[in-house]
Amino acid sequence: MSKAEVPIEFVRALNDLGLTNSSALFGTPLTGGVSSDIWCIETEQGFVCAKRALSKLRVAADWHAPVERNLFEARWLQVAHQASAACAPKFLGQHPELGVLVMQYLDPSHYRLWKQELHAGNADAHIAKAMGQVLSKIHSYAAKNSDLASEFSTDKIFFEIRLAPYLLATAARHPKLAHALEELVLQTQNNAKTLVHGDVSPKNILLGIEGPVLLDAECATWSDPAFDLAFCLNHLLLKCLWTPLSSSDFLHCYEVLTKSYLQSVDWELPSALEARAARLLPGLLLARVDGKSPVEYVTQEHQRNRVRRVASTLLIKPASQLQEIADAWAKDLNT
Image (cartoon, rainbow, N blue to C red; front, side, top):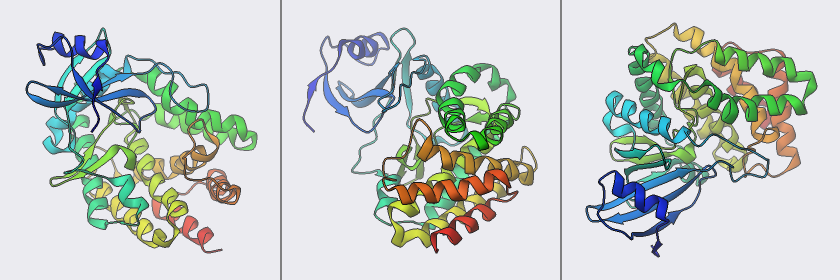
């Protein structure tokens, strides 16, 4: 990796946190994120990963977000480690004033990005099963420790960086579906049951020896666990448009992840959670073509129209089970 001098804010943060004694540090800026500046930084003790939240996200739309979300990501990391030690990078420190979070650096030679694996058509059902188990384990741990809710009073942040840019921005483009999409916002807000990651996407999931590792919990909030489940499953549907030859494998992973997750739900009736996820998923699907954060690989209008067609039908006549959505998607893919 080519090295550059690290911005002074990062140097100061690492010094204040006791992670270095150096007045100048060198590292490599890491790419891929739209919401933070992220660096791999070399310290006396080895490499660390440090990130600083941006107030304006690097997307085409005018999208701003509160920088204090960095603090809640730090808290999410600590809770996740208590739930399942290997499911997230180790937390090393967070500087509230500078908004710098420091964590364990995970060497890409030992960790593969799930998004890249899926793009290559490597849809491993064992990974999908492990992902469902990890996600439900975090949700279960937090739900049983409800005092954590006071540490994640981030309703406003979650609304600004998830509910509004995804569901309400999409509602503005689809007036006939606006009521259904607005109802999904209320559903999510009214079912706050546990700690939610908020961005369970293959781009934020590394595959290590001990299983999936979740990154980028900037959206962390106390909310509806159905959001995390639907958000992750949504990407498995969309990958069918990116790597069509592996569509059947993606849909199998969708089924495996769903079953794996729901089998471990012990804080509420699994059927109730599944029904909320099934109602939410079409809204998130449509949001990835017509919201503020469209996926970069759905580039053709006929692909976007396919998403609109399936999602619109399911928003008008909601499903109660997640497999119904996969079946509707598969049917449309085969037409």
